[in-house]
Length: 113
Length: 112
Image (tube, rainbow over all chains, first blue to last red; front, top):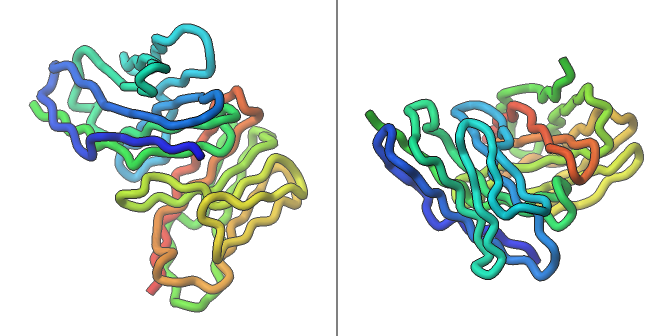
């Protein structure tokens, strides 16, 4: 069965600092990986996705993630965060693309001035 | 613009009552999903549908049901609401496995 582990429940960071949000997955078959962002009282918005191809995936708002099959990881990074990046971030996986996603427990990114 | 809407946005109900949460999308997507979001659990799949008349159980389907009579709607019914079903519910849709799944704004349900 698939599972997704987000190792940090909360990550505090100062504005303009780099950030990495960690995600590990387990799957015995081909896996598709996603990062979603949830702003307060909003639905989820797709940041980026890995379906196949290049292991370095670039998304919206300056975020990127690297698929590492040997370490079963898909960590999210941003070189310089803004106050507006404060949100909850969810890593998700699916064996069949965007269908039947399995989500991690989420990481709250707190950006302070 | 095409969109996915959930209603109501907030609902308070009593234990034992039947409750239906609506989800309507205007993209003509085949795939629709219901998730619940709980602290410490992230989002968990309740039910999903790959087309009209198709419904399938997800990870946490006990106490919930769905029906798909048309492409646009996938209502979620709690047959007899329980306090353990207090949660935020999200509906999502996608056209196929390789295209983005879009999420609604969520419905916050409180069972008292």
